[in-house]
Length: 367
Ligand SMILES: [Mg+2]
Image 1: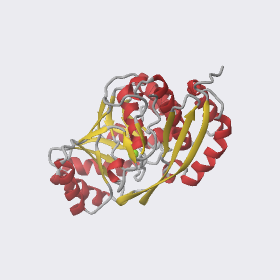
Image 2: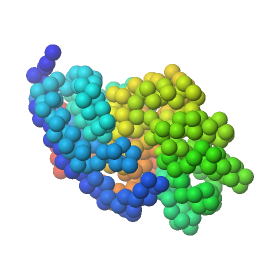
Image 3: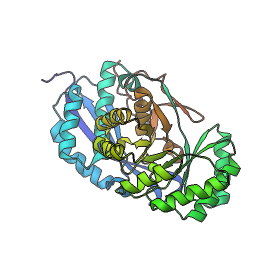
């Protein structure tokens, strides 16, 4: 089956380097520049789809160079194929490039952008149209308490209700940072993300220390190393707060493994870990297993973050939304995408596709 109109005419890719406003420090490392990849898919009908791969090496082992190399190999497999067969194409890519999820996610994004522009439907409606907006949290990295308090005050002033605090720098320092955030933003709901930094007993101790100081925690993300499912279950059982698996979940069967032993209450879905099609599978498994949904990211710019916003809004049911990384970037190389109002991303004005394209280039939509 192939269609001359929706055949893939060409796929181009290039580095997308964007400076951060200030270095971003979490428990697994320090970043001062985002080095992503922009992917451009052109169909025979003239529609152009844009995608972004945002690799984060400590999380998924990919970096800009491996993404570029993966795409080099993918392109000959896709040119000439029918973009309307996007699920089939995605399955083939997943079979060959199983661990190169960020590269696949960028390609899937560009292909689905082109498909939905051809169909003249915004991506969130294509995913189900559950709602046309999401409300993101804002993250505070591992910084000194004074800086954390100052950041929390600034975040609150923007109307943000949910603050995510990066932890994993030792219980004492984490408690001090969290208390400072609470002082700076007394009415915010607080989430913690340890990015695998603690043992299960340390994670429970951190929660106990915070509870003793009157801090309520809305969510504790990936307290323990990703392979320690029993440890994750221990925190879920003993911590008395909802616990999310993030680094522990890349594919749908990971959710089944967690659900089987009751190891997590929430799963953080990131398109860069799973790709879009597997991301949909993860949503389905979570729903069946009564695991609550979160969407997050690596360090995406507005293009891939818009795609994630479409994914969460369209599928619906995402109780936790962590799509704040475009706020960290010193430049926005894109036009269109969601409209930002405080922490709310509005998608309702987007006419077709992701609705986000590189500045100075064609939007790629049909006339
Ligand atoms: Mg996380």
